[in-house]
Image (cartoon, rainbow, N blue to C red):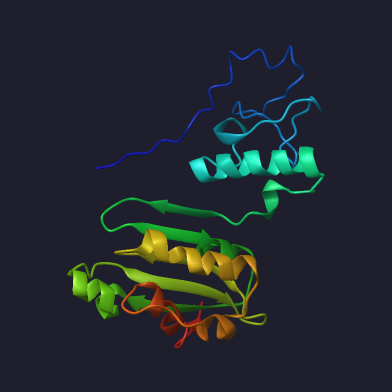
Length: 197
C-alpha cells in the first residue's frame, strides 16, 4: 500500500523574509513565469517553488533561468507541458491534460484507447497489463494529453510529448513511421477509433 499525503517545502528556515523573498500560504516561494522571486535578484528553481516537483522540471527551471539571463530568451515555466512517469510495475507515462482537466476546461475532445494485450511488444514480453489512452481536441485535432500504462510506457510517451508541443494534428502524427516491434508503433493505431469524451 502506498499512502501519499503531499509535500511540504523546506523553506521555513532560509531567511527568505530578510532577503525580500515572499512565500505562499503553504511555504512555496512565490515566482513569476520566468521563476524570478519577489526579490528581482533571486530566482527559485525546483521543489521550493511548487511549479514542478520532478528532477526534469527542476532541470528545466535551470534552463529557463540560464536562457533568460544569458540570452534574454523570454522563456517561461508556464510554456511547459505536464509530463511525468511513475516507475511502477507496469510503468505509467503521462503528458498534458488529464480526462478530468479536459472536462473541467469544457473542451470538446475525443479519446482513443487500446489495451496492452493488443500491443505486439507487450505480448512478446509477456507483459500485457495496462492500456494506451490518448486525448485529442475535436476541432484542432491536436493532442491534449495521454496516459500510457504498461511495458515501455515511460519511454513511449515521449513521441506524444513532441507532437503535443508542436501542436501536430493527430492525422499527421499517424503518418510517421515507427520501429517494429515497439509500444510506440501502436500509438497511431490508438487514434484510429476515437470516441467522444
